[in-house]
Image (cartoon, rainbow, N blue to C red; front, side, top):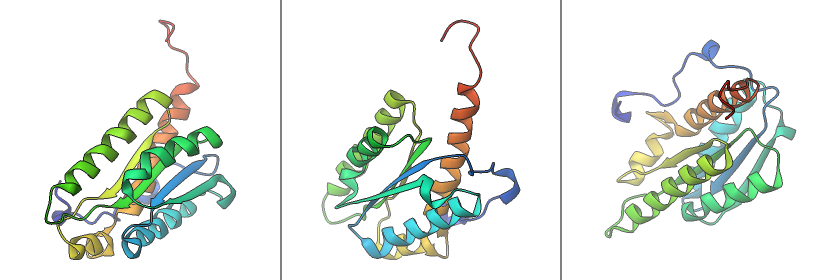
Length: 171
């Protein structure tokens, strides 16, 4: 569904499992910090509201969104995590630079998630304008950091639930 028709921060609180026993890594880009730090705050608030403790949330800052997959990999190597959340903002400019960055970040996080078995959540805004970004970082369309946190909790719960069952075919 298009974001223009949906508030990113709206969800059924009771449908989200507890995050009390889960460990999260968060990589946040400092480029467009007034936007990405708002995403980070929404993410942290949501994880805490669902029971995640501060000692189970490991946050690192990187210069820009392009560095998010590398930071996610470093977090996975340094901590025992159930999910990693990547937060950034790539605003369309006068060239196609935004497309290359966004594609590289999405591909990198997807590959890392598959290779590591740790869910890597794409919490990167890709708006056309700064105004659209602000609307999705705590404005009229909510906060994508909230959405990323909810996705991380759900995927981490799925991962831990499935790892406790044995496949009858040996995988």
